[in-house]
Amino acid sequence: MINPSMDELLKKVDSKYTLAVFAARRAREIIDGDSAMIESGSNKAVTIALEEILQSKVIYQRTKTGIK
Image (cartoon, rainbow, N blue to C red; front, side, top):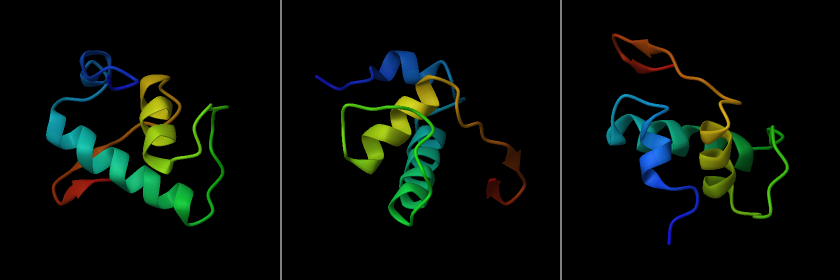
């Protein structure tokens, strides 16, 4: 089972593709040394990024060239 659930995550973004790009970008930031904005039971960057998205700790802005 995926935690957090895809259904709940998709309520925070406009598509599953946006979710994938947004989560990957945030996970790279965490790997590169950015501190997590939440307390997580996981030490995996992608899981932490998804939990941050679910809790609305990070937001995205759609631009003509992609996600900012």
